[in-house]
Image (cartoon, rainbow, N blue to C red; front, side):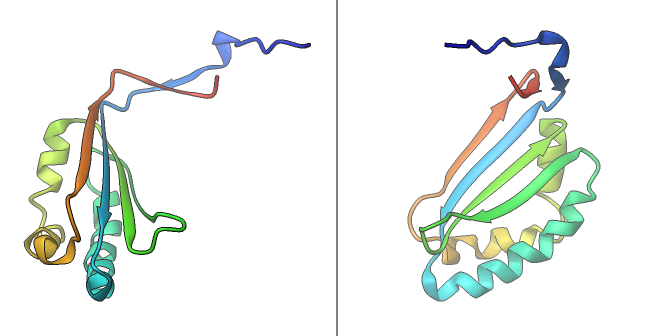
Length: 116
């Protein structure tokens, strides 16, 4: 049996201080409105200072269940994002769009390593 060795010189460590992972079930009848509001914000958000990545996924096999996965350089950058004019309409309508409770987690990370 061959064992796998981890070569520390091959690690690619990058700084990703803040990760937001949000999971939301959207009411079926509000799906199109949610997607309209969410997609309106994707490109401008990706261009924001302090944004590392910003992605929205629909959970496979679970209709109308969406996951936001975001990486930010700081909590200040994330807080500024939440006040942008292309995000505010989504927040205003969010209580009407969501079915149940939102599951939002914000992780403070010192570093992230890609690979083993």
